[in-house]
Length: 246
Image 1 (cartoon, rainbow, N blue to C red):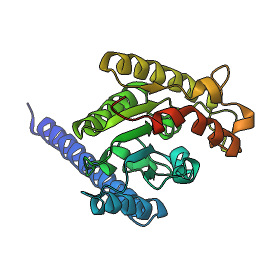
Image 2: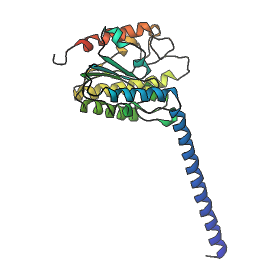
Image 3: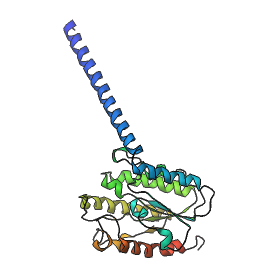
Image 4: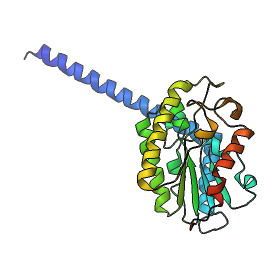
């Protein structure tokens, strides 16, 4: 091998090393910007408020039921709906199942790691933001199972509620692609719940038709209006009021 050849390959090697380091630094800088964006967002303040609230409530038996989910769960006053003060609403607008820096979400899993054992029941619905953010069904289902494990390890009676379909919406999200994923996720959740004796509540049987959220139950194609929540409340009422020993 000539000196010129050695010099040529050495130069190529240095270029590749330099390019790799440049890509690494750019990715590092991108992640830092994403983390800073999350930290300074209203979402982060609400997220940390929820985590702090869960920590502060450890050992406090004022709340018997916890509602877990995203903005769909957050959008209703469950205590008013059931004329009680024992329901803790831990719905978080924009939440994913797991950490997603690209879409500025820290994820439900991280939020409930501090969950205590004083809750008798948990009602869970999550996943639509994951699909809006282009996550695949496999990853969302795997994240879902992790969430289920965390809740069941606390010996809380868990109720899974179907992830709701959406429809043509003002945000221009592709509802047809998203709803295909929602359908597949719910199928997997039904199978998983049947195998593991977890109650599955099919809200879509009331709120949706032909695998699409009914127009009369939404104000923007994704989120529920008052009529939508009325149907949700009616559907889960017997599970809310039922004693765990029954």
